Image 1 (cartoon, rainbow, N blue to C red):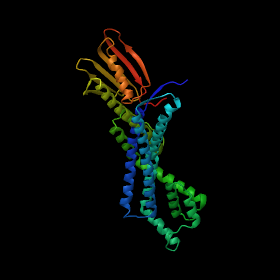
Image 2 (cartoon, one colour):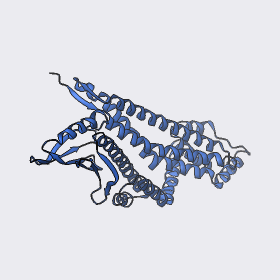
Image 3 (cartoon, rainbow, N blue to C red):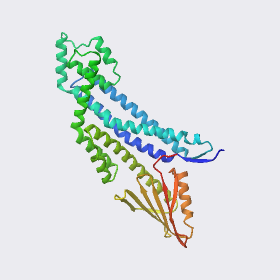
Image 4 (cartoon, rainbow, N blue to C red):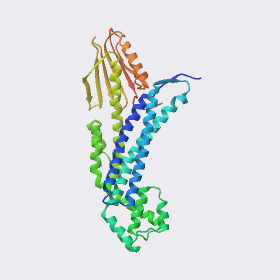
Length: 370
C-alpha cells in the first residue's frame, strides 16, 4: 500500500551550511601555510619544500570542492521546500545523500585540523631547518659533490603514496644513505612520528587556545567551552584530536541553533508578533535561548530553543481556542516556508478555559532522523 509522506529539506540545509562554515576556516589555515612557504622560498628554495606546497594546494582544492558539493546539495534541498512522495525510498534518497556528504565533510575537517595540518607543519619546519642543509652537504660529500639518490632508493620513495611520509623517508635517507627498502620506510615512519609528536607537544597550548577562541567566536556557552578544552585525556595528539572533534560538534550545533532562532523570529513576525531584541535572553545554566514575542492586542508567544534540537513554544492571552489561528499557520510556515522539519509534537499542558495557554514541544529540529 502506498502512502503520502511529507519531507522537508531546509533543516538539513541549515546543518550542512553550518558544517561548510567551519570547513572554510580550515581552508584559510591551508592558505596561510602556503603563504608561509612562498615567503620562505627566497631563503630556501628546495625541491622538497615546493613539493610540500603542491600537496597542500591539492589538499586545499579537494576540501574546497567538497565544501562546494555539500553547499550545492544543501541549496538544492532547500529550494525543494516541502515535497510529498508516495515512495518511501524516494523520500529519503536526496535527504540521506545530503546528510552523508555533510558527515563526510565534517570528518574531513576534523582530520585536517587535528592531524593533517600538524603533519604539514612538522614537515615544513623540518625542511626549513638549517640542519637540512648540513645533511645535504654531507650527502654531496659522499657522492662527489652531487646530491644523488640511486634508482633503487628512488623506486622505494616513489612507492610511498603519502607525500608527508615520503618526504620524511627522504630526510631519513639524507641522514643515513645506507638505508634501503623496508628499512628506509621504517626509518621514515619513525622520523615522522617523532617529529609530529614533538610538534603536538610544542604547539599544544597554542592549538588549545585556538580551539577556545573558535568556540568563543561561535558564542558557545562558557561551561561547554571549558569541558571541550579541559576534559580530554591522553597524549598531546590524542587530547587535541578529541578537543577538535568536540569543538566542531559544538560550533556546528550552536550555529544551527542561532539560525533556527532567526527562522522562528521571521516566522512569528509573519503572524503579526513584534520581536524586541531586549526580549531575547540566553540562559547559560540550562543552555537555552528564550524569545518572547508580543502582539499589540496583548497576545504573547514565548519560545525556548535548546542546543540539542528542541524548542518549546508557549502561546498566552487568547480567548478559548483562538490561539490555534496563530499556532497552526506558524507551524505550517516552519515546515512549508522556513523548512524546519518538525518530527514530533508532544503536548506538555493546555488550559481549556476562556483564556487558554497552549504548550507544545517540537523536538528534533537539529537531528536528521528518518
